Amino acid sequence: MILVRSVLFNILFYGFTLLVGVFGLPAFLIGPRAVRAVSRFWSRTLVAMARVVAGIDVDLRGVENLPNGPAIVAAKHQSAWETLYFTELLDAPAAVLKEELVRAPVIGPYMRAMDMIPVDRKAGASALRRMVDKAREAVAVGRPILIFPQGTRVAPGVIAPYHPGTAALYVGLGVPVIPVALNSGMYWSRNAFWKRPGRIVVEFLPAIPPGLDRRAFMAQLQHTLETATARLEAEARG
Image (tube, rainbow, N blue to C red):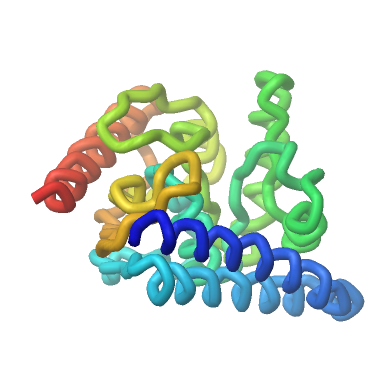
């Protein structure tokens, strides 16, 4: 049954993405707000498909910690599911993402039109400066910044380094950082094929206020995220 659900959902995922990508093109003539509406329709529908077809539901916790105004949302990243969910949940987020995504077919033009924050990982310090500048523009108009501190999808139970981008944003923007723990990888595998029925928990944790030095901030962020994520993974196993 899991194999059948996984195959069916993957067919629907790619087919629906292509369909929306093509038929949503007129939104580019209207402007970024219309493009974001198409993107939210796409993500909301796919999250609903995951629930109906693959049996993957969601339990949102810590709603009181959701950003109300400019903030950095620093989330664990275990699967593609949370990229869909955050697109639907957050208000016009400016997501930090690898530069290759804005050049990708179908989704790339949408990423550019929604003014996301692409990062060239090979550019070093200059890439961090450009990232902070772009994030500052987004914060100035009230958009939350979404970043995955480990920079890539990390399977449950795997230890991976935290990259300096989140600290650069924290120091450069002077806004709160809201850590987000989750256990999506227990149900939606890192390689994106296997989908196992269950309830993904997404937990928004209390904000880390601005003002800490870089080292203290990163230590607190990593401890907070890893501890909460391990708890959610254990809950899923239990």
